Image (cartoon, rainbow, N blue to C red; front, top):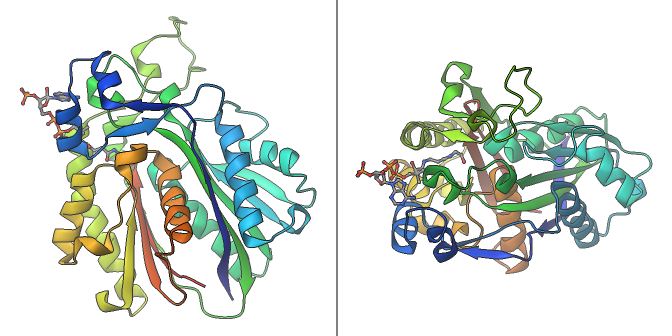
Length: 321
Ligand code: UT7
C-alpha cells in the first residue's frame, strides 16, 4: 500500500510585517535580513491562532481533494506553538470540521514536523489501519519569539499547510529520519509551565533561543546527507527527482544544500521571501502554492526534507498523483 495526496490547503495570517517594521523594533535592516536569510516579509497572527489557521488550511485541503469530513480516519497536527495544550490542536480541528469518525493527535517535530507527520500518516495508510488521513503543520512562532532578539525575530513567521492523503495500492517510498538530542540546546524553548521559583512570564527561557550558526552548519551538512540517503534507500537517481522541497528556514541553507547535492537551484523552490520560516507549516504551504500555480505535474517525484529543533532531520519521497 501507499498514500496518495488528494488535496492541499494553506492559510496564513492577513497581517504582513515587512523587514522595515522589524528594523523599528531591533537594530537590523531590510538589506541585512534579505541578504542573510532571503526573508522580505512574514505573516503574523493578530486575530488568527494556530488552531484557526489549522482549521482553515484543513478545510481548503478537503475542498481541493473533494473529501468529506466524515471520511477522515485520522487528523495529525504538527505544532510546537499551539494556543491550546489540551485538548490537542487536532481535536480542535476535528470539532470545527465535524470529522466525527477521526482519531486525532498532535506531534511535536518542530521544523522537521511536516515530514515526520507525513511519514506517520503514511505508516498508518500502508499498514492498512486508516484509509484517509489529514496532515497539518500549523505554527504561531510569533508567540514564542523574543521580539527584542534580532538573532531570531527576523527569521520566523506564522501559518499553516495541510494535505489530505488516501491509501491506495502500490509501493510506498521509505523515509529517512534522524535525531540528535545531545545537540538540542542549539534551538530550545522552555514551557511556560516549567516548575520554577521565578514564575515570571517574560523570563528569557520562555522565548525561543537559537544558536543560529550552529543550526545553520548542522542543516547545511545533514540535509544533503538525508536527501542522498533517501534516494539511495529507494533506488532513485537525482535525475528522477523533479523538485526538492526543503523546509524554508533560510535561503542560504537551501542554496548550500543545492550546491552540495550538485543539483540546479531551479529544482529547489523558495517562498521564504513571503512567509519567513514557518517551521512545520513551511513545506505544506509550499506544496499548496506549487499545486495551485501548476508547477506540480502528475508523475513527478518530489523529495521533501525538514530539519530543526531536537535536533531532528528527515527526508521523504512522494510521487505527485
Ligand atoms: O528552522 C529551523 C532552524 N533554524 C534555522 O535553520 C536557522 C539557521 N541559522 C540562520 O538562519 C542564521 O544563522 C541567522 C539568520 C539566524 C543569522 O545569520 P548569520 O549569518 O549566521 O549571522 P551571525 O549570527 O553569524 O551574525 C553575523 C553578524 C554579527 O555581527 P559581527 O559579530 O560580525 O559584528 C551579528 O551581531 O551579524 C550580526 N547580526 C545582525 N545584524 C543585523 C546578527 N543578527 C543581525 C540582524 N541584523 N538581525
